[in-house]
Length: 145
Image (cartoon, rainbow, N blue to C red; front, top):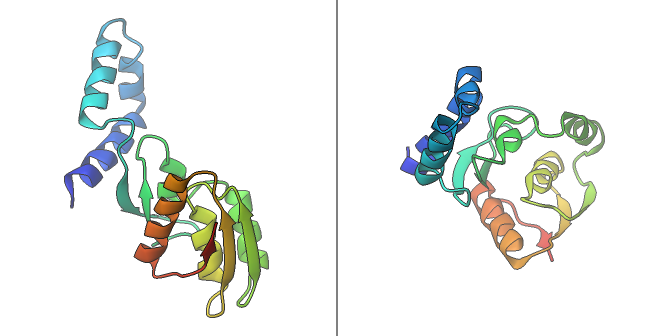
């Protein structure tokens, strides 16, 4: 397992523990812990992970372990995931305006195969590039602007 992925998983596990979160509240000590966490896993770190549950289970995505836990755990916007599962069928056409990191793009593409028609509109070139990289990891082709 690559070191960034390992550090990301360690960060997520530790940051979800109540004891660790409580230590962050201790004056001075909390600042030191926070600083160390940023040295080990800078805020801009992104790594390839496999979605652990939900309708995206098994998708490989380029995520930031600090901020994209919901995608990684598969529990990001469960109501939307449920709607996707109910209404997106093979051959569906889906437009995703402001697709962010492409989680729902990949989910919709998976649900609408074999004849997926999915278009996403991105805000920045970096986000568009990352969605393309995710699509490559997922072996999906579609439209992106």
